[in-house]
Length: 199
Length: 378
Image (spheres, rainbow over the protein chains, first blue to last red):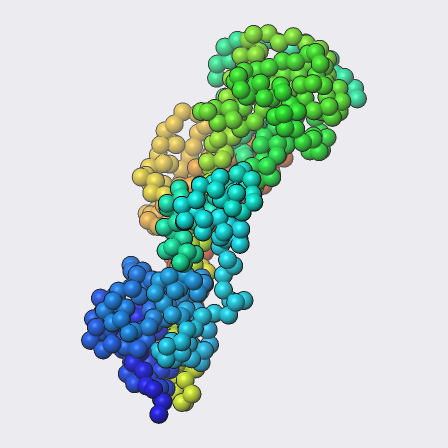
């Protein structure tokens, strides 16, 4: 028998709730459908009903969808989160860093959105195709330099390890800082961890 | 190339006073957002030549984006001749010294070693004066100037004047950069506001409707009606977003058109006659626009005419508010409206109105603002 899922939608737009209600209300795999407009409502519903999957708007009014994902999973550890957004794209790594198992863009077709919700509810992941994902923030070489910075290597050690001149390593670190909007190595590592660039 | 010898001209004053500032203000007064960087720095070079005995001047600045130094304006030298020269601080020791020591450097011997060879050969320079354009610890570039090719000595007075002009030019360049930065920020802010508005209204409505229409079961009557309403609202939201005023919002002026007219009328100088038709009042939302049209019209009169009389008429009927400024003594060849009036016209357009300006009755000039009091709503 088909597994039926409890679905929580967290979004501050009434019309989005209505659309999901119409779409998911007819799906045989949806057991129950819950709606929350704020983080507090979402956490309360998650704690009470232990939804299989929660769709969380990335830009809730005044709240961070990414932080709310973590709070929902704390309230209901079995709940898997799909982040949903109408602006911008999110890489799988960044979504995973926020504790999400999927990312849905609001310009996707309804059937694809429903399929993504179901996949995540059943324990799989759902992310945009490679072509739909944002270009990688860092180049392969910058990633290597960042990994070594995170392990505490000095510029000289990084240069020796990657067969680069110290000057080239310094240039890579400058670019890294600029791209990550970090002022120093510690901040660069922290930011990289937060957006899923480091394990 | 021909070498122009310096003509007899009065020696520049050691204490330049406010004259350099006046010349800069005069030359830069009608700079607007459409003025190219070359035109802007051409005028700085022109100011240098007008205020000193220099006949030719060129501004060289660092182009951060392209990581190179290039000529960015000139006077007395065709700009095209300079645009191919790529000096660096290494091959231009005269500039390096001027910037490091923050002083005017004059080279009369071995000019080929002081500047790139092509610069010396191209212009046939013998004596070259290099003035730093730096202020507040920031080096903007250098001004290279000469008297047309010949050898000359520079007096202490002129050296000091050039150094002062370099500082003034740096100040002007800094002000221009700040203004451009502010304009960029304003545009970015507008773009962000527009994106936010569309994201929060149109996009959410379209997404919700698209989810509902994606359902396999036919929609019932209420759901179809909701789709219709949401789509209609999305269209209205989109239209509102597109119709948002793009001109900078008029700041609170702290005065009124009536008070401004009274002040102008009582001011010494040209006779200003005010004809305020009946009980006409200025709608509060049109006050800033009316005041800016009046100010721009008077500014243009002061700049482009020799008037004996200025007539201002204010009227209002059931349809329109009208402000008209007429003057005599318009100089022949007075061209199209200046940037101020063009901006005011743009602002008027946002309110469904118009600003016209042009010659009437021979030497008379008219500026007229007409704004409908109730815009048509369809």
